Length: 291
Ligand SMILES: NCCCN[C@H]1CC[C@H](N)CC1
Image (tube, rainbow, N blue to C red; front, side, top):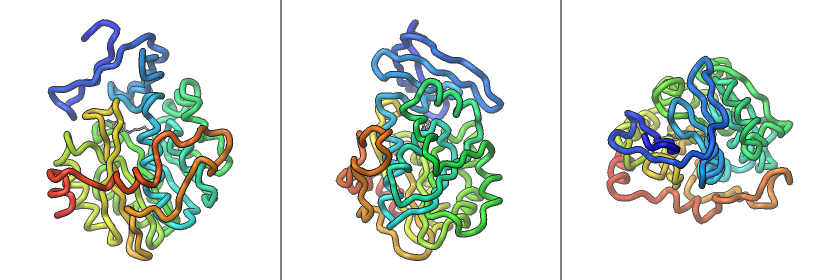
């Protein structure tokens, strides 16, 4: 390992490792679920690492948090009740709070240390917790969803880490079934769905499961995140049977005037990139749109 550099080595992306130059290690801890580290990078601001995997950097987190949130919420009229599974850093909460129609934001994060570390080292990300509509639950999202009455939510956002460690069950069929049950007819779900360059096999299985479970629409969109493996990440955008949802044409626009004045303007999302994000290269289209 190069001195003064952090390299992201994982069996989920064999033979490659993105590296960031380290100025200073700011935090290292072991929670009940994973190793947690924060370091000051030379060029991407502060970086949050869980079990050796980059979760977010101050410089490019906007691309992920804004897209995973606004792709679903801008596709339905007047979202009111939103559930976030994972997302303990608070970035998705910050983005949900831009939607004035939202009345209730529930979040279920399994690891309390992630919340505490985000509040201490990433205040511009954890600012999302300051919204009075937010209800934080520390626990397993699978168990949380079992206690949710059917048809409760307009939208569910699954901001998970990778299917290694605590997030593994968030990529499995029973979990998707519990999300479909928790959503109202025509409700929408947005999930972290890995990289078309690295994980076509995982995506193929997720798409097959979603097509069986979500009888509205099933779509895959993607964004660029320089510090994620292969420099990109995708999302499953699905809706339950009911009022049709056309994810590719945002009907509920969001702009810089939306939301609390305490959060910075949108850095990444806009309606054009919303539409563009569903355009796929042929090798991915062949697998995702044929399933
Ligand atoms: N809210 C932080 C984003 C967490 N998302 C994942 C982190 C790990 C990556 N390999 C994939 C995205």
